[in-house]
Length: 373
Ligand code: XIL
Image (cartoon, rainbow, N blue to C red; front, side):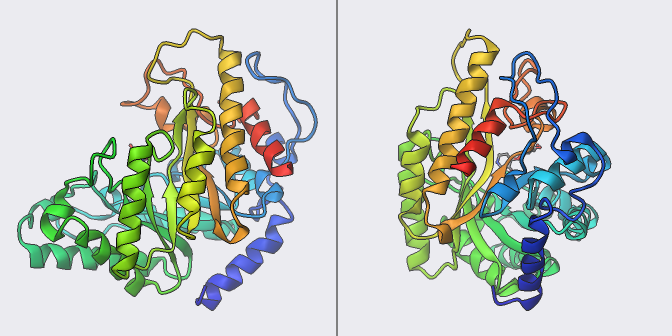
């Protein structure tokens, strides 16, 4: 952390954590005061004050967010009470920032940054180079390597530079490994800049833009698919050998209740083997898996809680200096991307620690109990 301002902010943040982790932790709303509600029939009843995960944890607890949610006082009270870090769900991606004419629109990203700053929350940047982002401005120069390289460099310098001193870290490269680990993804970035060179360049440009941010490579199914994890770790090793300033690994942790017990712990140990910081970057555990499951909802919620507990337990087993942050991809089930097309299914999924009303589920208590040891 070479940036004094950022260090100051984190120190301030530490003090704020004692009062619930965001400046307005004591804002209105019963959740803020930790009263327990009558749980939904499907949630195992637990009475007593609802603790703040970020106060229990000796490391940052995060959630994804969008500017739309900041207008919901119940969501904001819950987020500021439970979390010490936020990630933009989509408003710091190219799709939100890079306009078709190649210009930049930071209005939504600035909204996220301001929300975090005003509440003493850490800001985590997501994401700079992602195969799923094929903006017009880059498609127009597809095949012109020099122009493409220049455009990617300018984009990263502009975005990372803008939040320098506030963003504690960035997912520089997202989802570089092919779906089932059958190699690396082919994408507009790999075609124009080289299979691994696009990643090396992206890390160099991000480091150039902000010498103090922790730079991460992020991917999914690293627990469920050992072959993918192996390809991913080999890739990280090669990039490190080539001098890529990778400071951490992000494991998205989008699970479902059919994930093999023990898989999260096994993966965490292997991912930690390179000695880099680890970010559980987008955790959610779907009640819908890839197979028919007729168990009662209450049973599925218990299995979900067990997987959350395992994931947090595995994270807690990491050396403290490797615990970058533990982020869920939302807080309330109703805000989850798994409740929105194209992933909504029958609209009843409940992948997050809090239910639609913001009440703690067994999953939440599993996380709190794991943190309480
Ligand atoms: C998802 C968002 O949650 C959705 O709202 C959006 O429509 C698509 O992207 N991996 C990632 C995240 O790295 O950025 C994705 O977020 C989920 C999978």
